[in-house]
Amino acid sequence: MIHRSLILAAICMAASSVMAQVPPDIAAKNKEIGKKVDTVASAAIYGPLQKHEPYGVAGLQISRDIAYGPGAMEKLDLFTRGSAPGQALRPVLILVHGGGFVGGDKSPVTNGVRSPFYDNIMLWAVDHGMVGVNINYEVAPKATYPAVQKSLAAVVAWARTNALMHGGDPNRIFLMGHSAGASHVAAYLATPEFHPAGGVGVKGAILSSGALDAGISPNNPYFVPADRYGKLDFVPGLMASKLPLLVFYAEFDPDFASLSAQRFAKESVKAPVKPRILLNKDHGHMSESYSIGTADQSVSGPIEQFVKENR
Image (cartoon, rainbow, N blue to C red; front, top):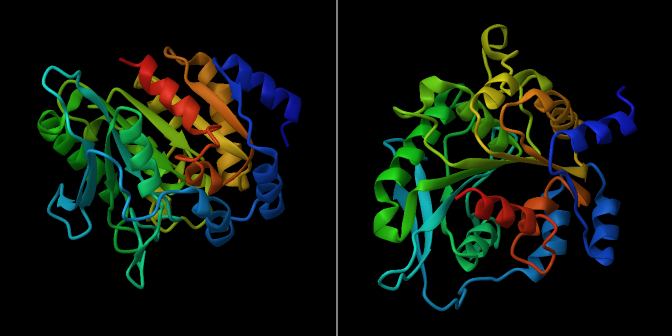
């Protein structure tokens, strides 16, 4: 086991490390959940703090289930706000949800009631001068590597083609993935065969609590067959991409996420473009994403700063 002091030293060396803060009452609740991936308990904390439909946000425009590719699951929700003549183009934030490679949804509806997650990230993006794109994709076991990476190539192409008509900047597209979504984004970024001509197709990426190599999650149902794909390592490709990266993980993350981020922090010291590594103190695996759009800005603040810095 790597000593904690060495891990923190490596994170600081990896450039621009920030130790985030969470309001004390929420921090106590996150600590009680601990390292469990508990969507219900985390939603109970942050759900009451989020907007719920109808959102009633002035100028907000939401278009749901737009096809970005031919697959049945290749649909996106688009969040925009009306643009005035002469207004600067806005960065585009593409969100790739998690779900253990076998589940998850961009905006689940239960008994006619829409969850506030992950609309919360889209509403926050629009409120902070971005265009929000929230995608679904086919999951395992129906989809196996590299099906989702081809979907990411398709949605990047869609955004590059359609950004302008929605006030977005096709040259400032950011991919954000959480958990399995972060693994999918890492695999896409690290593998040039999925990229459009001339480069990776995006300005930067945010990787939240995901495994950055296929083998860190035992019996992974997506990277199969294991003897061919189970040992894929995306860290060298991420560093070779020279893409600005914000990589973060939670204090109470499961080991697969924290160990992967800590390893990346150590190895990225050698990267030509130093990533920003963020340890989200007092957060759990789900609370990172669920906190975005609330007064708890421990996660959203660094994301906003990262997007602003990469113009």
